[in-house]
Length: 334
Ligand SMILES: Nc1ncnc2c1ncn2[C@@H]1O[C@H](COP(=O)(O)OP(=O)(O)OP(=O)(O)O)[C@@H](O)[C@H]1O
Ligand code: SF4
Ligand SMILES: [Mg+2]
Image 1 (cartoon, helix red, strand yellow):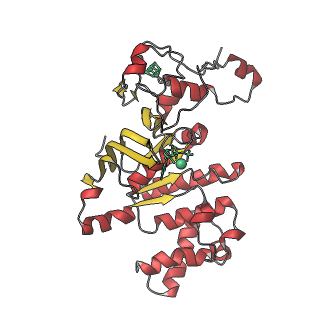
Image 2 (tube, protein in one colour):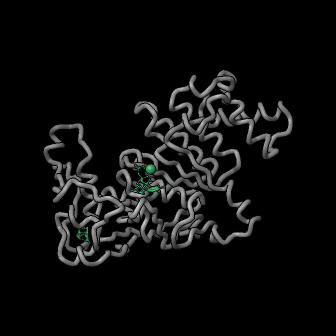
Image 3 (cartoon, helix red, strand yellow):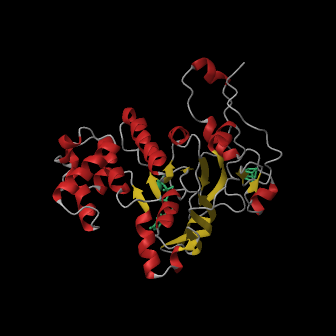
């Protein structure tokens, strides 16, 4: 594989809440390669947004290194940091909050074009705004330029946010639950716009989501990392992970996805968990954080933190008993 574009090396992020020390991210190492799509999947509160903010340089981790093109962003010179900042952009879940409500679509996109002197005249700016809107499928651009965010659907607002995110020619976009606030019927089309930006502009994406189905759709040739209470528990090619999940947590997540056909649903094997409670990052279980819920847990699981082991083909799993526990597959045929 190529050199990583962005990388976390043994990164931990602790927050203080009164007397409580919350390990939002604990000893996480993760690479994003140039032009790839990496989905970061996990339940609410597992640390996904914190990972995104650390990649962006918005949060300085308690320990560990954050590299961009091989350089530690927290040790960069002022000049290097200034060059790095525009190269990583973010698109949030709440497109209402991220777009200024009193700016038209034109004003939202024209402001950075003019501020960074990408365009010089009104004519040039209008032409560029039109091109940007066209690229993200806000069509016809002239019709939408004078609209305010409240005139637009969630899907259109997210397209405008994506257009704005591309203006400074980023190499990486952190998309944090970008379609959770979009009507279900429009989600795929917004993900298709993101795929287009990935393919045509070679922008890498970190796609943060709790939804395995959209992760599979969006990063279908890419990779996935699964997080559980501050730790990465499984990473690899997304198809490998979905077809051959090896961590009991990913097996449980997949087994919980509803299957529409009742005949097939009967054949689906649910992985029974010992507990449905998600532990809090303020009081994480010892050893493997999944052990209170894991149906296969043994004594070692309570005692020792499992490291990510490579099973080959970059498929890595953090489970002491990965070689012993039964493989799990949807088993929908026969
Ligand atoms: N600024 C903060 N101060 C204190 N605790 C925080 C802070 N930011 C995050 N946390 C805690 O860190 C943990 C991880 O939060 P984070 O927002 O990264 O999770 P998430 O996976 O993005 O969740 P969600 O799916 O709900 O967005 C949670 O327990 C959260 O309460
Ligand atoms: S290490 Fe133990 S508790 Fe953790 S997932 Fe593996 S078998 Fe389950
Ligand atoms: Mg989040």
